[in-house]
Length: 126
Picture 1 (cartoon, rainbow, N blue to C red):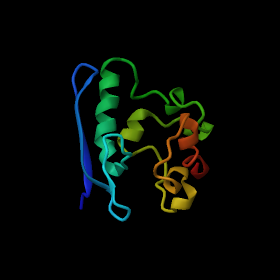
Picture 2 (cartoon, helix red, strand yellow):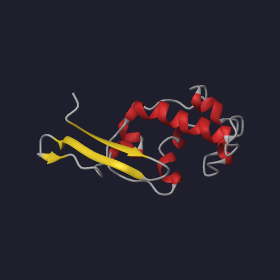
Picture 3 (tube, rainbow, N blue to C red):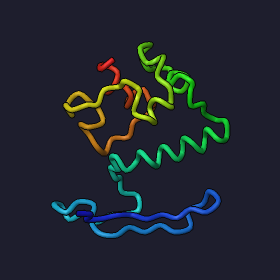
Picture 4 (spheres, rainbow, N blue to C red):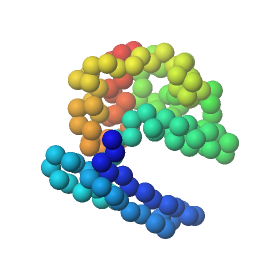
């Protein structure tokens, strides 16, 4: 069931169309807005992969560089993990099954800044 969604179209770094439909929260009767926060879950995997591969093609990222090159705040145990490993789900980073252990699961609307705040949820598993 999809009670609400938003659509945006961009052209040359400019949003040329943006519209929201339906409800953001059925229980509280909150309508969807173009700036509503949405949890994409697994849908973001192919989007991120596409963006990452575009940056690889532009030589802005290296598939076989350590992920710590881009996120130096990760523990040393992640030194051998590369972007390729993460994209192939071969990094050795375990999945999480206890939402209480992962910071971003506690508050799905929370924005993390800087990246080390969101990465902290995975660090104890190393």
